[in-house]
Length: 267
Image (cartoon, rainbow, N blue to C red):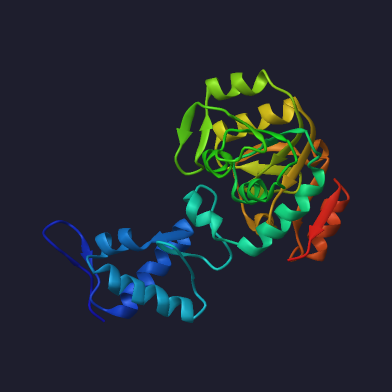
């Protein structure tokens, strides 16, 4: 096996395919996601070579291919790019989003959190419902911006690139001046006691929305039960309902049922 060599620009070149793929897997284990362009630059090989490596690893069941790169088969870590996270568990997320529509009454004011599952719900909002949507999510604003059958209140602030969310003092101040019937919450991970996310700024915005909501509904695919995120959002007792998919284990089902109203979306 050829050893990696330092080039003049300090990049490591991996001339052996097995060694190169082992390095890709090592980076995958550390980050949960790898980008094909970044691998190409850092390993000093072409993107075409990287994509062949990723395809080989995918054929072996060691990675899951997504646009622009690959992620670990069990999912993607909190804090990974929004576009990457949106491709994970996409069928389950659509099923959860469809189930969530039962909590949307005609003419109601709803808050939609920043997240890939809540974005799916926004896209499924029925025509003619006359709802008012309050959101700090840039993708949700883009999805609803041209619809004339609803009212969209977009909250500005400091844009957080990985979540595509506006956060910060201006966002919190804007949220505090409003009231919503139902807030559709997203989370990066679920613990034994409640929901978590990856950023203190993100948590602050979610908590501000929870404070102005008459009802809080968490939308989360079952893979979040295997994800660890550091910042607490709220405990399960603050939720009026939690909607997840039917891949949830019996142990997790029993645990969540004892703490909140649990709804299972068939996927």
